[in-house]
Image 1 (cartoon, helix red, strand yellow):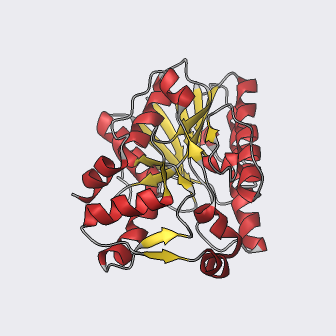
Image 2 (cartoon, helix red, strand yellow; image 1 turned 30 degrees about the horizontal axis):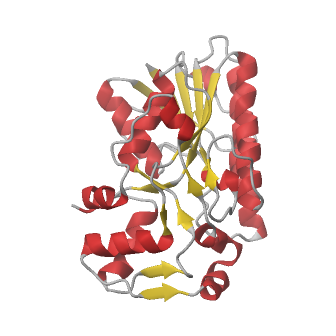
Length: 299
């Protein structure tokens, strides 16, 4: 197959490019500059401004597009940062879909990343793919992001919008940032720790992306989240146990709000997400249990 990947130099994108090349697929990627971190077999195409059409007509005929690009969420949400986050995802997706629409030979499928932030802070409520969207900045980003992606259906594409939970991997994402304080015995829960935390092992996420690409019956929103979410306190205990360190501290909510501003809602919000449609469509998680997933990642 011939792929186009956006966000190919990110935490997830690099892993996906490596996996596709190892299978023998052809990979094209869009970005501001050629990456020295990616295998030279991946073909680079410049896309410097997400408000402009990407140069898809310069590529070979594409079978699938995986859209992962976006401004990082993990930063203080100043007004300019929120504009960058929203524009990179919503406007970037709009322009990508428009460019796809202009192709003579169109790919069969667009897999466009979204996030469980779609649901907003929902306490102990169990959230599945048909649950309504919530409130807040990330909810509006995810809602509009998915809406733009779904316009690709007008050009005959099958569209899948996997909603990513916290991705656990060795080389990036949330886990490496957590390890240092825990290894020094300074790790702890956020606030009272009762908020639900949904997560997915990187290997399961890669498998799910390929599953979505290769199975014609998969379309629409699917939750990219382990079927066994945990509370923040349970996650803290599991990580401490995996590292053989204590976790007796806690970070007060007020301290997080002062340090991170509105972005603290990502850490303090409660999202108890289950992958109901994901599993109904036949996907099986290899790492559904947190303790085993952490042991695998930290071994």
